[in-house]
Length: 166
Image (tube, rainbow, N blue to C red):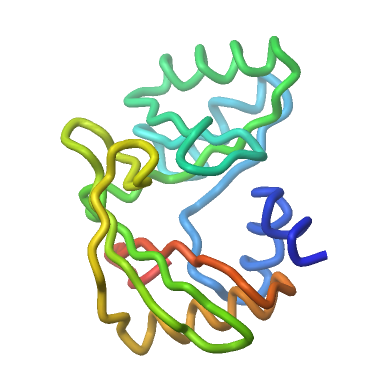
């Protein structure tokens, strides 16, 4: 169950948001007429568009404005893909942290920085990683997220926003 919960982005967001885990504002869109209202619900463009499944930063797109977002989502819907629209956390400047959790303990953490010109910090997308000393609020967030999704082993990505870690 834990793997199923964590691999499906919509399911993971539903689980975490029910338990006050900080998350970027997110909307699920299935129909074209829902796209523009969904962009407004997450705070307007730019927005991050994600397919429901994917890892390593693949299938994650930054749409700089409403028209581009609408065109991208229309294209994805034409290939029978459902998408999530997320608030873009600009203040993170392409930096996040990944905490590695094993059986209720954070074993290690790394900071990841996006490659120049990209917003995705994934190493597979050219991001650079370095050892990181996790802060207590990040550790608490990671442990709670892992417990809620039902995993024993996980990497938890955390992004810093104006409202704290998400």
